[in-house]
Image (cartoon, rainbow, N blue to C red; front, top):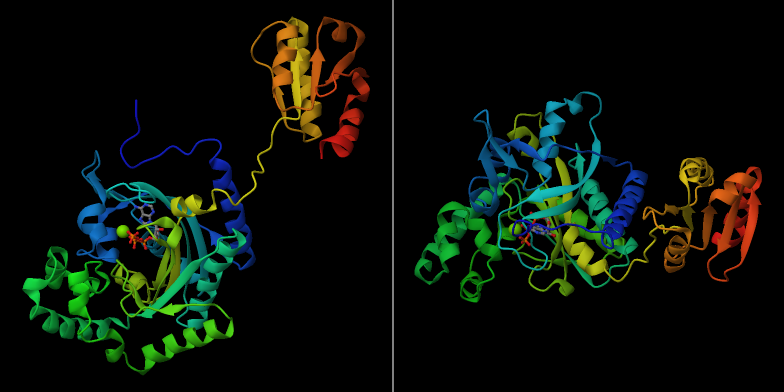
Length: 420
Ligand code: ATP
Ligand code: MG
């Protein structure tokens, strides 16, 4: 049996990286007062249509949508922000506090062509700063993304930012852009030609050279921005300068989801080949209102974990706990008594492995020697009779007998002196 195309098992050997990543995110984000939220993987299809936008790639061709047994149209979430916004509304979170800082880590689903760093089930770590329209919130979230990357020792990334203006400014701009591009309609690539009718602003980040050439002469988004948008954007740029955070303004950075306004940003890294975007984010002041909540300006980002794991593969030291004690038994009584020994080991918080092969003592000792454990604890008939445990040091082969009631003290002693 195989997995479905584009989905992967995360196996021992890799999962430790995920756990470390979770710990680092938890640590950095909790300290900044961000609290984890876990929303369902399954949502009403309508939620994504209304938030991400009907003419985006995600809603148009990437969603895993189906009818459930009760004929409801449901979708496996393709991203996290819409779900968090929905949760904010359904749980009336706006009643108690006007600012909410939330983060999530979980699986997302998009029907795309699988490639390195692009899967159909993938994971995102994301944060949402809900309730503030201040550019200080934008700085806070951008800083946190970089802080996490830095903590993971990731080098060579590039922060690109842009302002895509307010909804009104964008509508005004789209009109100008369409007017201009219609003159060159026949020369545009097929996708851009389609977008001219549905989502013209996305044409700006077309990767097709022919289209990019045409775009050189197009009206610029930044030329329609009015004072408020410009002030917001300039504040962010000045703060990034002040913080010595390198960035590049990319006037063609738009983002694939409809709900963004003002700030849009991405963090890119070369090591990933064509899937070079590690993090995408921006401001979404109208989203919560648009799906039925009170007007609540917000800003956030999402990092693709699979892409992060590719990069950090060799950077983190494995901190997997490995058994220090290998436990072997012989005889019916010993196999019962061993649970008391295990309790003592657990109290001392030492990692252990109980032999499950049911072979004779000699073979079990061999197994212990082949493991990475430091000592082998032997509980056989002699040991039961004499109320002691035989401890064999696996490196030297030295053996000693430890009286049962002294075993805990013995373990504590060797834990501090030898195991660490
Ligand atoms: P891309 O241009 O690579 O398709 P996107 O703009 O669709 O990215 P977002 O919706 O902004 O991506 O998601 C944020 C991040 O999630 C991306 O920067 C990327 O790291 C990750 N991501 C998105 N889609 C996938 C996928 N199919 N497989 C793995 N990671 C993904
Ligand atoms: Mg995409």
